[in-house]
Length: 353
Ligand SMILES: Cc1cc2nc3c(=O)[nH]c(=O)nc-3n(C[C@H](O)[C@H](O)[C@H](O)COP(=O)(O)OP(=O)(O)OC[C@H]3O[C@@H](n4cnc5c(N)ncnc54)[C@H](O)[C@@H]3O)c2cc1C
Image (cartoon, rainbow, N blue to C red; front, side):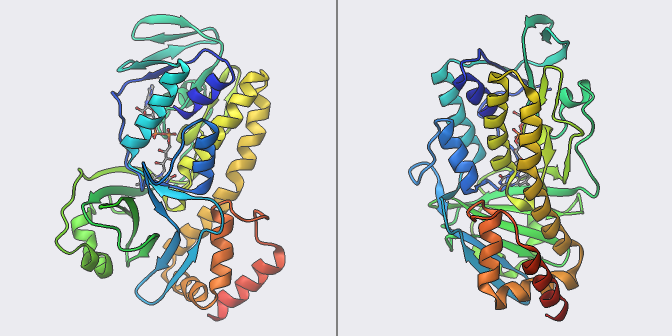
């Protein structure tokens, strides 16, 4: 939807083909980082406290330590995916995007797409069809999945958020993220390598979250998806381009999937308007590099409990350092990376923490 809106804003005629009926739900932690909010604003979709639940930063914790940091610049929100989808549909409709819900793209060549047996002429084809993208496979743009993949589930509870931070909890064999999504609702997402682990049983590993939930009831159905880290071999070929999870995936722990997708949509529209998809390929590479680096660090913390304990202890004892990491991660920092001296310093401190 973001890619459609961005292309329409460049005066292209756009048709969206989606086999599902709106508003479309998706297993997601539902956190929108400042870069996602800013990109949505560029698309003409305003996210504020009247439609979403604001959050001010992050708290990382395990059973030994905990560290918090505020997002220094920009606004971040939690918003149900169905509500976000509806806002995007409203904007697309206002701009005159054609929406073909419940229809399936069966094949395409460089001049036409076949939708439910009918041929439509087209100049560009954008595969925004998620991690198992058919468009990516048909255009032979390679697999975007790298092992090991994790299983992510999400469930909403009717309870007032107990903090204005997004909480990232590490348990022994899984991870839980708590995001406020409304004045009286939170979204919990659970990540593990165990496809059978569900929220009810996992809560035993997170006594603090279980205590906060008390007798609160789930108000949605628990749904899950695979999450992993990877990028398509190329994100454009001929007249085909990929956007969002179809083009790359950063493990959900990064909370950056939507930010990346919306920013990619804006760059893609610019490249389409200039009829030069090479511009998109290089902008996409720049956009994803930093997110991939940060996600690898977070995944390392998952893989090694010893490393995780040390890193969390370091973050807790050096709040300014943790704040810097968060500001880079949320795109609020002037520089978008730690410099070499800071990295060496971090390595030594982790070693002796
Ligand atoms: C558990 C979990 C928690 C997450 N938490 C966060 C978070 O807090 N913040 C964040 O930013 N990101 C988060 N993510 C990542 C985020 O959900 C994804 O990056 C984002 O949904 C990608 O959007 P997309 O539009 O590319 O793909 P999707 O949201 O998967 O949408 C794909 C669309 O393509 C349609 N489609 C599928 N097949 C076809 C076809 N053949 N033809 C036409 N249409 C098709 C689908 O119906 C759907 O509408 C999380 C992911 C998981 C799994």
